Length: 123
Length: 107
Image (cartoon, rainbow over all chains, first blue to last red; front, side, top):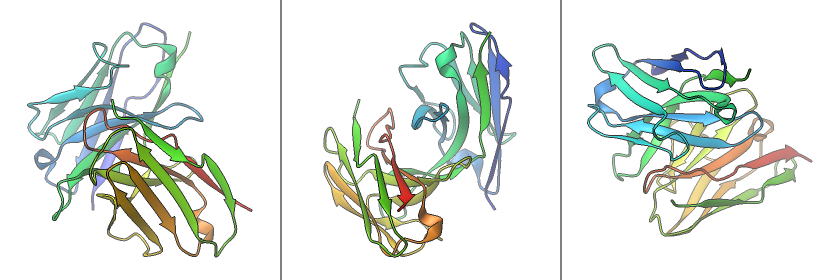
């Protein structure tokens, strides 16, 4: 059974830092790109960042570029998001999501999601 | 960036109704379009990927269609557990943008 378990969410002051983790199980972690997606209170889904299976390539939304860093440790089946220079508008539930491609079509999709971890940026 | 626009933003429907949600991309994304369902306080759940492929375990009353820029999610015979918010997402390019969501409410 695929499981994704996020942790690290907390209340942090503006300008502060936080590190989120997502521990994966039930699949071959290194075979899959992984993503972070966030959802501000009462708002829609926003893709934040992604990393390829062996960590060779990373991508981030313009809203977090230069402040957030995605990484992974395949030996520990762990995805991380280092969040620096946090702002009030970073307040959200952060989800990690496993990316897959179909057997007959290469279209990537997020087939499993964690339960989310809440980050609150406030003084 | 590719913009995804869903319509309507919300709708009211009754159990047993057929519901259609549309999603339009700002440029062609071939069939790189996914649909997710989210219930309050829960993580999103994948329903449809590659525009029309049903994710394993998802009831067959859900179906997707479209290609290029225009896509549709259809729920045949709406069930009580289907009242939720639905999001489309393009995976043609990064950023992997989502639509703004469509909330399906009970009439």
